[in-house]
Amino acid sequence: MTENARPPGTLLRLPPVLGLLLLAPVCAEYLYGYDDSTGDPRELLGGLFLFAPLYGGAAVLIREVARRTGRGWPAVLLLGAAFGVVQAGLVDLSLFNPSYRDIPYWEDMFSSSLLPAPGVNPNLALVFTAGHAVWSVTVPIAVVESLAPRTAARPWLGWFGLAVVAAGFAAAAVLVLRWSVETEGFVPSAGQAVGAAAAALALGAAAFLWRGPDRPDPRPAPPPWAVGGTVLAALGLPGAVAHLLRAVGLGEGPWRIADSSWFLIGWPGFAVNLAVLGGLAVLLARWSARAGWGPRHVLAAAGGALLANVFTAFLARPIGDVAAAAKYTHNTVALLGSLAVLALGFRRLRTARPPTPGS
Image (cartoon, rainbow, N blue to C red):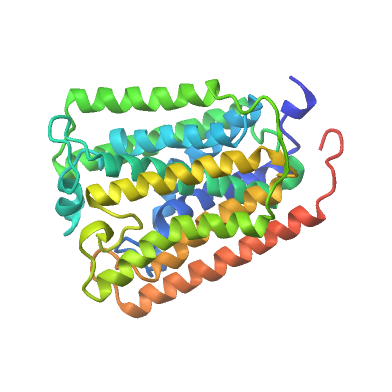
């Protein structure tokens, strides 16, 4: 094992591991404030006992695989997408369930662009997969690595630590699956389960087969603020505009959106979502190949995605009976906390010293 592939000392590796275990579920479940736990500190803290090993465990394992094999952010995104398929298709089963959790708007959202034969909504498949890839995995990894820049390129765990995290993830996934089957009374067909597993394996394989451009682009990379602003606008504006139009009674047609979602629904919505996510992926891939692209650009992109969800959340309506005061307090705390963590990350990157041997 090379020096760069060795985990750092305990004092350097445990804080970022714990930080990622906690930040991943916060980004995945809490920042947007879509659930009926919004604004309830006790429920939110209690949920971390399940969500930390589930989302945090997945993020830690994906990061460790990427760093141990020397792969970059495209691999992290693809592995995150594979996790998204597993989570939605094989764990909580939301990808195939036409009446998930008896959410009032779910049936309309599920049927709005449904392919009846496989029983899959390609729009939900896209946004569930991309949502987990971006907010459950890549954003928290980028943020935590910015807070620990000395060890950002190195693994944080040894084999025993990896085994513990993997066991925690597996246990949490089994608990969620059992809960889904017992409370929802829904089980996907064999074809749906096999299809989800095959898609996850294909995305995982793509992460290891991906090859970037043979030659870097000599043109200078755009400044970090431009990267972050572009990501924020691309991921935040469609949902924000749709929620505003919905509030004034103009929310039909291409701009249909459900109460607590960040994405457009229906076939026109699918076209918009695909164009936005695909176009943004291509643009970031090209920018990241340019001269001068570095950790501050990565954090800016992650920050733009983070704030897109946080800002849109102010316009969304949570599931269940959540008081307005609780909702907006939750949204405000999420916004201030996100800004504080991003500011600290940029400061850490600006003042970081090169790592010393063995650190």
